[in-house]
Length: 481
Image (cartoon, helix red, strand yellow):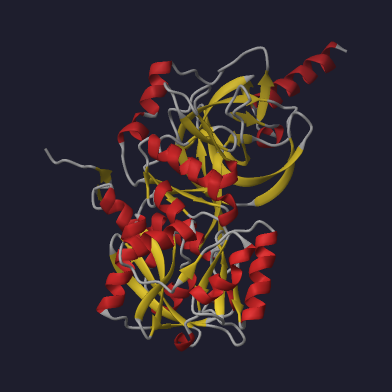
């Protein structure tokens, strides 16, 4: 009996020798993710391992799906932020400790713990509410590790000073700018192109969904935060691309970014002016910018005189809140015009009426203005059956050489509204070029594809210029002295 017990103990001892003994918490490193030290909670009750991740963005690299994300590796601190990239190996449903299932991206990375290292799977999850920024689950430990939960840091502990040394390079090394793209849909061509262009210039691009941003108003410590609590105060610049139905909230966010000293490619004030068609038309008139004759009234009693004031039917009826060709109606005769105008008024909708420029033949010109210069222009022709040249409604685009007068008109219109980046729509008439409207979030797809120009790259270059960022050095405001 004693012989058998002794033999069994020897076998068990040999099995223990094959395994690494770790404590209930250990320091880990992920060299491939540029994380030299992160404290992990060792939990054999959890199947998968997880690492704290915020601002998670999926992208494509050489035909493969990748993900970029931010890690705050130190517990109870956001002062160190590591931006990581990795190929996606899975998009998996994982149950949290509270029992709630959520979809998470899964990556693979080599983990170093003590003198040992091997590749493990990690799910990306926001662990701000957890005590540890990493969880080491049983799949990563299987056939390698035995856990002694009564002890910690059996493979080595680090002092606070040592951890600071690990991350000193992240504080000291300055590369690209941190640029936020404030929009609603990351899948749109324009938004994807801007993200790509920024990354090609060496900047850290962060997509910010307008509706997932929120702000803290405080005289001492004002903030803007993003989904999960990530603080956005350390951004260098923001590119706003705002949907009409989110204008009010978006302008409030942009005001807050500006109050924090963060450069915005278009200011809240300029965007607000461009979104208010009546106000922008008034500004154009006051500054000698020719527009189609425009009328505005509130009372239905004035409808007939309003129609006559803009040279009668046919005429254009515009909702003040419309954009990208939406909320624009052609009334072909006086009776139709009166019916549409009164119908809108009965709905308490604010509208403009505008003369119809017949000689334009359903064509207009989109001038893309960046920092006071027309960088590209196209002619847009309306789809069959449409009266307005609009690529969103099936129109076609072609390259056009515009006149100096048209260039000056486009630049002046953007300047009057205060827009650094603008799409200025011009129509040719018997009276000369007229400004139809100015878009503060102009689309890139039609103009880039028609002209072959890198408009998104030009937008990024304009931000670099505004912030005095030296591309060869990658340092904002670099002074050789």
